[in-house]
Image (cartoon, rainbow over all chains, first blue to last red; front, side, top):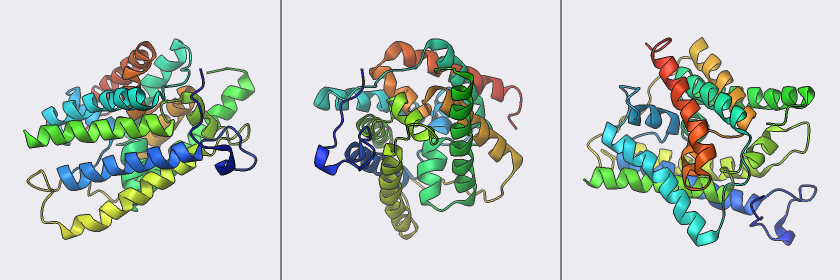
Length: 157
Length: 137
């Protein structure tokens, strides 16, 4: 159940018929607006892993816990609203063992590295933070290597 | 109260953006990381667009005495590069590659594919708890 493309044929990138640049630009702008609203409205960085740890009671840093809980609840609420309005869904997720192992590594790694794609990748890089740029280059690199290794081993994921 | 509504709004906007952009589709994320296979450039557009918008906010922020709905700005101040940052980011990338899911889309997916999302988030919570009782300072 692949998510249908938003990008019309005439706007498609030559050589990448499966890409969805229009959805990327529009969705990315919404993500940027959310990060901007969190920064200018709440005075905080919109890093989901840190906010999640705060909401779960596993971190003493960051926004007040009640705010963290509501931010986290907002994520599926926004996804549900967008899904109702546009019909865009989630595509297909990997089998459960992959999800579980990935979840553990993501949880531990984001806490040790103080952030994930949102906090480092969007908020930190747009601030030109050296820490976030190094973190983002690192996690994209190990992500690429992971896919390479899984492909070499013939593991689907 | 205004704080709490704003936090819910920020999360909802974020979740809507993740879903619209296709980042809640693990195949699309893994396609971006599959640089030497059937590469999917969509994530470049997501990141580019999000970075451009957020960079404008960072230009506005220093001119503001306080946030619109809060008392004061509480922003990261660290500038040092340490092994924890790099090891943590490296581990995160491995997990990101294995499933094609990162924390934001994991939560957003609760509304779209709840069972898969709960398994991923359960693992993530476990990883965070493991960190809390081992390497947390």
